[in-house]
Length: 324
Image (cartoon, rainbow, N blue to C red):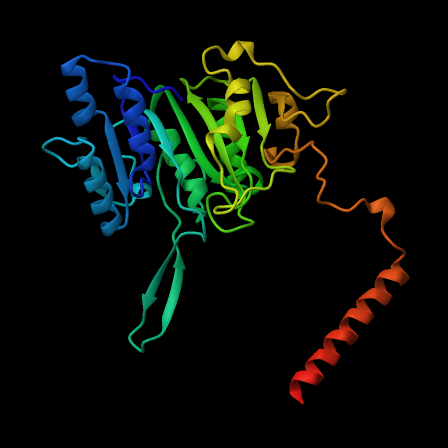
């Protein structure tokens, strides 16, 4: 993302401030000017979170690194309630995954009911209780024109219909969604949770046109097995993606996928190709998954059924032994 010292950086779901600290460290290395460093510490880094304890931890984390002025750079608020009046040069964020937004309400008789939260905002083109899609809409608003964003999102944001499809079309038409990084499962949350990073830039809206011309997808998920503990993600794993991304000059990007190299992880898709996909689905794969069985070599149905019966009978025998 290459933030520079004069940029304002926002994380609207900042947690304890990891993204903000990484941005600050990168920006600080670029200048020795005292006024610029002072401004960087006091006027460039911002974050929001809706959990008071986390806000306190993040503020302390930043202060220990010298970030913050007379006012705390971290606010305790629900970012999705309002876009506010301030716009930012860059948004770096990993919004919370999990269930759709909901509020628990206790009745007079002690019963608890759950009401979905559909955020009603004029700047949102779609009303939904899907938290991640709402965060994406929020980021679209709070970016300055010419602003840039890198956002971690779960797979459902890439393929969900209804509100999801509307937001993806807006992202393609009014923004330049130039890159999608498909991450391995289990590196942010529990094993099996699938995440991606969307990289996009904001431009003035245009009529009857689209800002995105090509979407470059890096598949760092298929046939990649990482874990949080025993085989965790490190810088070396991302070297190839960084080289392919070509941040210094994106016009020099070259696909590593080809007919001769079908397992190449870096592939370009045109706007026309994507817009024709069902529901403008951005969950794009092309590499053969080695973990999937070759359907042509599966046993006959009768053989599979017999195996299932034998396994069930064996399990019943074990339970009978335990009962005795």
